[in-house]
Image (cartoon, rainbow, N blue to C red; front, side):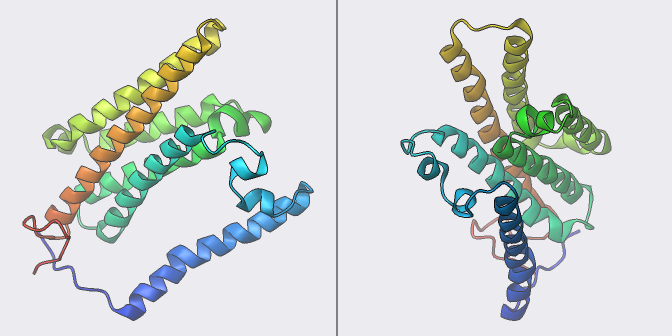
Length: 229
């Protein structure tokens, strides 16, 4: 059942921009001030690009940044589409849960949660990985019949498979203590991660488009997302 998607007013857009944009950004700035003061670093060390603070060439970390951008784009598309439709049906709920997972993966990749941050706090890094798997398993369990019928599922499976292969390479190297062909190993591991993130993002985007059409009632005949009655 489709519902009409009304055009938002300028006032409502400003309120949402302040709530979802300015407020989190202000909190991040405040947190940055506290962190900079507590570790005796300058605030600029938190705001400036890493290549500037480390005096590194611009290409250092470029592919890592691209991977985080891909995760973030996928999460943004998923959550921006699913949140307004979260009470409209299981398809929107599926996209919402996938968006939350994708956002968590973006934060993990950016801040090295499972392979750095947690370990420094005395928590096994595998805890985060288990959490992601549990969340994905819950998502699949709640929507298994829907996923079987959706064409987007094959794309999500391919993305998940590539990401899983990257994780397997990482674990095999870590457990086996392999050091030979280290550059090749990094190429395979991080290459699979970037490819997996990109394919996963396409799958999430396709699912978001399906939510727009089937739940929010956006016309299939337009690529501009103009709502129809």
